[in-house]
Structure formats: structure tokens, C-alpha cells
Image (cartoon, rainbow, N blue to C red):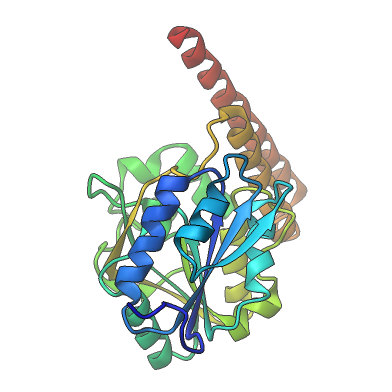
Length: 298
């Protein structure tokens, strides 16, 4: 079989790996199958794995470009490490717990060629049970959009546009249309546009960097599209750490960073304090719920 990076690359794939041998192996095998005759280079960033899995994968898949960091970099910094060295016309940021199919790379290349104003595109991500990973198409989390989600109105009225803008559930899953942002598990980017923007802000350690990048792309005047007629598999949370408190901390910290960076100057001080208080209360309630479940399971 021809190596997926035997030619000058059209697409540079960046995968961040941390102690997920079987998931990353399945992801790389799916690239071998789905890339077909497309010129692809694949960068595997071993983000401080302590089980030797990065070296195992480098030997098993000699066509990958292997980068290793002994220190635990944030998700943004780890992706940037390879993205700045990549040579493809397009960049694909891909989670190690995904599996490509349906010639997704070729289809995105064709779409981007036909839509030069589009700088970033995503596809439909499906979980193992066939349900939609709703993060793959989103609106930006403005205070009002976020409030509807916190109050559960988006779940109560999933087909009402006014309440369900956060995850766009009022729109069909299997069609194509412009969106505010996709998800870092699969972000297909026009390199010449995205690379000068960062690509990822390294103030985010885990979570939020994908929304931030999409925001910068939109602010720069470019389009972002969701291609819902193409789907791949996403083993949801397969790459998240098992330390629940660590994940909860960085999730809420990223919410705070994004709001302070992009929204606090647009709203009066009392709205800002309400948002900060809401983030803090949500963090406390999630921590409390986790502690209660932990005691019950003890």
C-alpha cells in the first residue's frame, strides 16, 4: 500500500496522543483506509505519555511524523507544536478517539476548493450508538445562548430556534450549512488562513480552544461550514483524563477565559458579574454532584 504521505501533502493531519494506544491505533488505521490515494501527512504528538504507547505507534506506523513532549502540554500547545511544522494546504486537527470513513478527507478537500471563502469545516460526528455528538455544530456561547442551555430550555424546546441555538438542534443533522463553530475532535482548516491566527490560543489548557479558534476565524471574515452528509465515528471522551476534578476545573476555566477574552467588553459590568457568578456556581454544583456520586460508589 502506498504510504499516506508519499507525495507532497494536500492535507496535514495533527493528532495529540496521551496513553490511548488502542484508540490511536484504530484512528491511524482508519486514515490508512480512508485517505486512499490522497496525499496526506500525519503528525502524531505524544503529549507526555508514560506507558510507551507513542514509541509503539511510531514503530507500528512508520509513515507518521512523531513528535514527543516529555512535559504535559495543553491540548492547544500540543496541536500547535505540529501544526507550525506541517506542510499541507489543509490542516486537520483530529482527536485520537475518532475513526475516519466515507472518504471524508477527499470530500472536505473538494468542498473547500469549491468554497474559497470557507476557512474551516467540520462533519457529523457520531457516537458508537449512532447518536450525534452535538458539539460538532454550535453557536457561540453568548450570555443569552448559554443561559438557555443552563436552564435546560434548549433540551425542552430542541426545535425552537430561539432556545436551541447552542447546539443548533433545530437544524437537520444530515445537511450542509454555515455555523459559528465546530469541535476540536475534527476541524478541517485552510492552513493559510488558520495558521497566522495562532492557530490555537495556548492560554487554554484543555477545552475551549476550538471555540476560540472558530471565533477568530469568523471575526477575520471567513466562513465555517458543517457538512452533515458526511459522518465519522467519535468515541466520545475517549481521550479525556479520568481525573474528574481536573477535567471539571479546566472546563470551567476555559469558559471564563473565553468570556473575558471575547465578551466582557461588550456587556455592562453587572452582566459580566452574573456570567462569572454563573460559571462559579456551575463549577461548584458539578463538583458537589461528582463528590456525591463518589461517596455512593464507595
